[in-house]
Length: 567
Ligand SMILES: *[C@@H]1O[C@H](CO)[C@@H](O)[C@H](O)[C@H]1NC(C)=O
Ligand SMILES: *[C@@H]1O[C@H](CO)[C@@H](O)[C@H](O)[C@H]1NC(C)=O
Ligand SMILES: *[C@@H]1O[C@H](CO)[C@@H](O)[C@H](O)[C@H]1NC(C)=O
Ligand SMILES: *[C@@H]1O[C@H](CO)[C@@H](O)[C@H](O)[C@H]1NC(C)=O
Ligand SMILES: *[C@@H]1O[C@H](CO)[C@@H](O)[C@H](O)[C@H]1NC(C)=O
Ligand SMILES: *[C@@H]1O[C@H](CO)[C@@H](O)[C@H](O)[C@H]1NC(C)=O
Image (tube, rainbow, N blue to C red):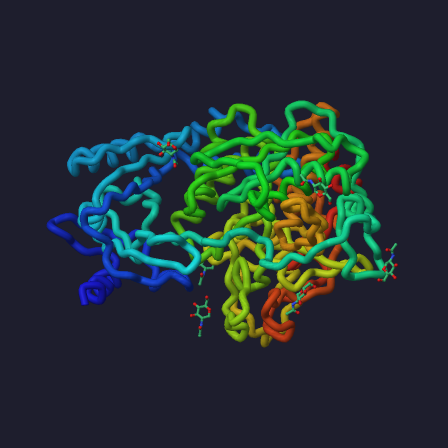
């Protein structure tokens, strides 16, 4: 009854509580599928809320980023320093004083928690938070999450914080408990198979040698200093050095089998070694970066904690504090865009904007549920034609990588995540590519999606039957999880050549991909992304000539991409 009354109150945009004018900040009609309401949260429970303060000049940073990343610009690839970026991202003095006044009036002690000062945290009781933000925290359970989580379906801000506070987290954002983009299937593989792609066998195993032959990726080691490729890891996914060694002996016998990676940690993330500690996702990402980006230093950033939006955010704030960041970052995890509110998704996406401006190519797997979210599951409603975009792939400041399968011809695989954002408009450099694709849809097309949103993926690459090692077993894995680290490795190798030639690295890729590099790809024109589980007859997109939301511009041709990068 109490909850029903509150929902009525929240359906209007502004209310007055005890003389304070409250403005609705975020609300969602229901928790995401799988989360079950268990009643109101205990009043005395203490919660720590992260508060994002409005940045000094995000629009200025975006304009600068477009300028430095667009071929032909007078400041092309003149990437910004950590402090240059901070000048744009740090909170405006007005935002800081508004929060300080609010905090001291309410007995709160804000603590700055990000290098750019744009995030602070406050710890308070549930009852105090309910009162200050006109909300009602509840507890929720999920079959895949231990214990309960505390969230709310609606949160408001006192009017004096409106325009100064951009995000309150965790409030209406829910964590995806299984953000890993490897479909939950693997099959045992054999050792001693031919490492080359077998074009007469569409189910042929993919190895580093196969990928090198298919896309013309060099096997000679990179030599430039100042280059590194960072692999992110969430959800207690741990990469095993002994499995990497076994993999390299098997699949890269031409490089030292002791080649390894550096472990970095955020939020107390660890990387324990031993039997049964292998994470398939972490091992896949580490094996296909070390195995493809020959000679490039590989970093493994293990991010602790179970809240996926927080972990994404803390990855960006970790790198905001690093003086000499990696030149490429790859992430094989994602969540359905609507699991996050617009404000949190926008803040995380702007974090990638800041990394791009520093010359980091931010690469993400595009999702494994075709047009229906990050995964599709047995029993999903495959007749629901409202498509569900995947985040962070839907953020225009990342480069999203979809998956293909087969060699002659290479086709889009059924689960390749693709579609259009409901939160982020298409950047102008994408509009011709999207317009071309939309013309291929019949006038009575039944799929429901946002035609003005950012389209993804941007590019694609093989994503099925990758031979890898986990717990000393040879297995075959797939997913856009396999495609993203491989594409990121290609970018890292191109950066090596650029640095050796005294040129700046590629940085934010998309304006380059949609202009000078758009023809450096094999156009993939066959495939239907209805999902891994949903039958092929269910409504989805079809690959087409030119850019499409299954494979982007297609799969990379190393020499053409290198030539475009050197222009
Ligand atoms: C390639 O695949 C075909 C069809 O499965 C098979 O007959 C052939 O032996 C394979 N070639 C190699 C070199 O493995
Ligand atoms: C990391 O560990 C320290 C020491 O145990 C603890 O105080 C801190 O809260 C932890 N941080 C996070 C983000 O879990
Ligand atoms: C179809 O999916 C959309 C997006 O997830 C959801 O909002 C809607 O309620 C679904 N429709 C039905 C009839 O289940
Ligand atoms: C479609 O995308 C635009 C641009 O990002 C956005 O403003 C609009 O709210 C979206 N529409 C829906 C129904 O999500
Ligand atoms: C892995 O398995 C191989 C046999 O397939 C064995 O020779 C090797 O000792 C094993 N390595 C470890 C670390 O268990
Ligand atoms: C999707 O493709 C994979 C890989 O080819 C295949 O194993 C799976 O059965 C396909 N799913 C459907 C529903 O056809």
